[in-house]
Length: 161
Image (cartoon, rainbow, N blue to C red; front, side, top):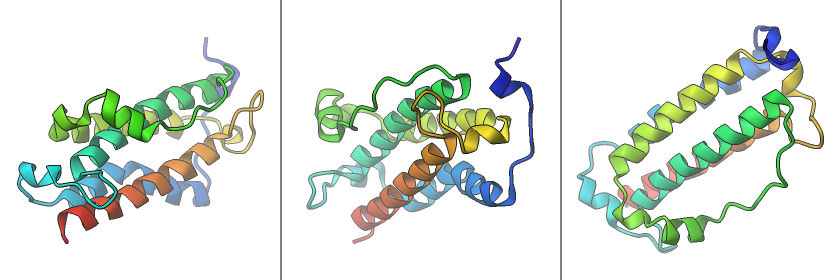
């Protein structure tokens, strides 16, 4: 039996539908930002010390973290207190420099589409209410949109300077 939150499927409201379309299109925007550069060009770091490769892998890792949060929000399970995104720590300890950027793009795409499938079928009430102190799904969606937009611009700046 489905939890009550997932038992009723309601169509997305018009304002949510527009943001949801942007959410689903994120992998395409990331691919467009990368363009047709040689994979070796992804390794060139910018002033921040981050390369386009680092950003691509970061996007995939954060999407994995968001996937967990989405499932907790939608099932009503309490989120552990939000931990800060340990961007530099992840970059170093997860050895972004050795990880495959093509695989990162694919992992991001698959996770984003999986998350979208779940969110698309969620009851509209989940978008505005918080459960047990958790963020609402709307907050998570807005954060994900802003996060990808910022990193798409970062990738473009790194690769097309």
